[in-house]
Amino acid sequence: MRRLIPVLAIALLAGCASPAPAQPDYDPGIPVWNEWAPPAASDLVLESADFESEGEFPESIVLDLKCGGPNVRPELHWSGAPEGTVSYVVTFSYEAAPENRWLAFDIPASVTALPEGEEVEPVGQTSHGDTGFFGPCALKGEKFRLWFTVYALDTELGLDTGAALHEVREAGAGHVLAVAELGGYLTGPAE
Image 1 (cartoon, rainbow, N blue to C red):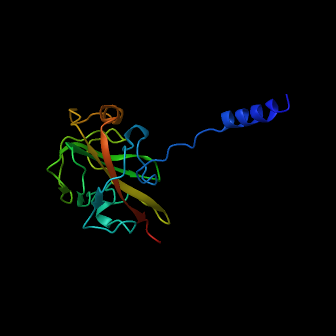
Image 2 (cartoon, rainbow, N blue to C red):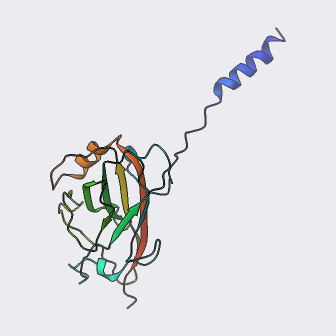
């Protein structure tokens, strides 16, 4: 009986130990939709000629409504897509109100740059129900982070312009090969 107790204790302890949670192979700092997490790390990089990573966004991005800005999407370009990439999805979000501010999908794998302000088709609905670029607006004393994300997919989504965000997310789930982010900050006027 004495020998049985240590053996049972070891068996019970071994049974209680839970495996370590799986760690993602991509940068977990990139805010991706859960079902769009890529299976592995990649060399995909997203950049812009209009601003530096984690720098200040250009004034041209500012929303035209209450902030009086031009509301122009900056130039974006990417490289390092993995083999098997068929299309890209590019999104724009910001932390002040975590939402989708712009969403383009089914960008062919042969396209690796979007010139400043160039219209892209097809585009999905923003969180505001629009299909155009919806820039941010930083009011007096505000500063917040914004980011563009590019997803390399192994398929085309086959959706029409105006597709709702949930439709894009559902259609692309399980098809993401790689993801890259380009973030920065927008600061409102000091006075």
